[in-house]
Image 1 (cartoon, helix red, strand yellow):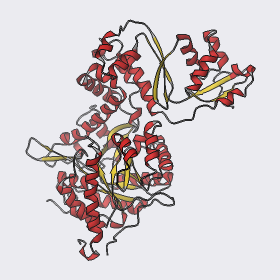
Image 2 (cartoon, helix red, strand yellow):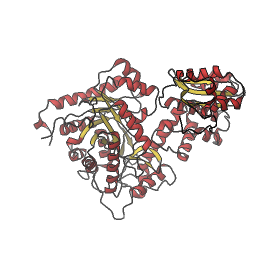
Image 3 (cartoon, chains in turn purple, cyan):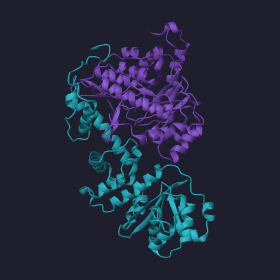
Image 4 (cartoon, chains in turn cyan, green):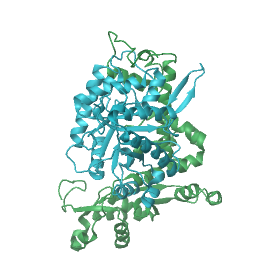
Length: 300
Length: 280
């Protein structure tokens, strides 16, 4: 039987406002004031950790807003897949924020961004090898120990694969969860983008993930770039509404994983808050539909 | 559909190490050896170089965006196209050293000073230095201002031995041009005000720091500025005063303290070296 509500939301050993199995939105600077003033009806908020490493105004807004909403802290710069050691200053900054914000969820990416001390400012793909698996697990363990909580690790959107990869990505991320005890942030937009770009089956990928480890789902928009040879490359730009294909995949993910905290991500061309709330309402409707369904309706 | 999962790739003997792959990708993204990583990548209908270019674009755009956010007046002074070229050259020459991009760009002003296409705008590097000080102030950590009552408890003879710790948002900038006026006019998009500024109007000495209301950019008298500079570089009051001669120290210090420019102090021994910080 698939569990309806995997009990994996709350980080270990902390009295924090746990993030509910409901729809949330990414909190961006453009909406700080509106969220602080109007307290929009959304179940929870996610922020990018790196946007709050400094002091001043952003942190003041965060201090105020976190009193009204369960929070999720989403990192983009820890570079879990680097052969460099984790940047201790970066980990300290994340740790300080975790202590201050007391997020119900803390997440990072299955990717790398730093080599030889140079930050390449993107979530770069890893070769899916035993060596990379060891590196990622080592860094996840190190981060979880320092942060004092369980992390979620997010599947990446990718535009290339390495010829020497030996492990299917779903198995790789499942192994990271198995070995480190971390959870999985299943980004169904990333999955759709990667599966379409590389021609693999997104449903089979979902089926290969351990349902009990799924702690959060992301949905987002992406762009489709037409190439000169007539093919299409999907670019994960978080700059538009969630596409129908991604909503379908999301429904499939809910069927498999049960209801899970779900975030609408929107990072470029950030729209008015109402648009984000409208997207979140769609996710919420899917969650409610899923929670009404009996277990035996779950897709195999 | 090729397979259920993305398991079509098969193991190869003599596979490269992860570090070699990451270094090759870095060389490619940094344009130091564009094809360095191509041999590791599955083409699958699209050349590895094209695949890598998606990541290179994101890398360049993220870094350029960080610079644009930190240097908005420079961006407007030179225009978007020029800025994009300057940012691209800079990003490849001096890529970020950590993932906190709000702190990226400390050396961009020095880069602009040596960037030949920017040479015609003589005050540009100084405007950039001011913007970096403002950016630093914006993102500095929150630290409570010094409790002035602690100073009030000192005896007069102890005053020269007071050594302050500056708030992390505070820095000083000087220029041969009125860069503060230029900076304000550019950010306000006030072309009339900008046109009215005489770049040869003379030097400015500026203090930049964060207050509750936002970032302050304040003009100072040159001697007061030099005295403040000495205090910010951890000189005790007595030694700082010796470098500038008699100025209105009580008024100046009152202003700095009221502005929250210091967060702590200690008393150095009468005979101690100014930078001997190992005791409180």
